[in-house]
Image (cartoon, rainbow, N blue to C red; front, side, top):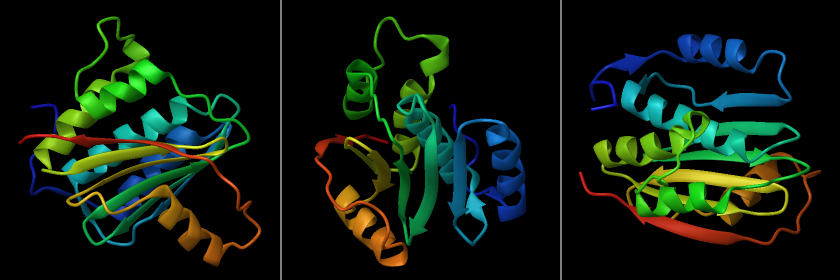
Length: 171
C-alpha cells in the first residue's frame, strides 16, 4: 500500500517543519490548523490533497488544513483557480487518467489513501476558492467551511459559485 501504517502518529512540529520547508520561496502559504498529533495516514492524505489543490492555483494562494473531529478540510483561496477537469474527475472516480504525468501522481494516490482511511472524498471548486474534504459522511461543504472561516475573518469575499463532485471509495 502507498499509505503508512494506520496507527503511527506524526507530531505537529514535524508537520510544520515539512510544510515550512516545502512552501518556502513559493507563491503559496499554508496554515496547518490542526493542534493534535495525527495519524500518518491522515497526514499523508492531507499532504496529497494539498498537492492536488496547489496544482489548481497557478498564481499562488493561501492553503489551510483543518480537522473537525474525523472530517479533514483542505481549503484554498486564490485570485485564480484553474483545475484540470480530467485530473479532478479522477478523484471522484478513483481511476487515474491514462496519460497521468509524474507531476500529477497525487491525483492517483489520494483516492487510495482515502480508501485506506475508509473516508469519503469530496471536492468543490469556485472562481477563487477550492476545498477537498475527506470524512465519513460527506457532510462538509465548501459553503460551510467558507462561512466558518468568514466568521473568523470577515474581510473575505462572500460570493462564490460552486461545482461539486463526490467520491466513495471501498476499503
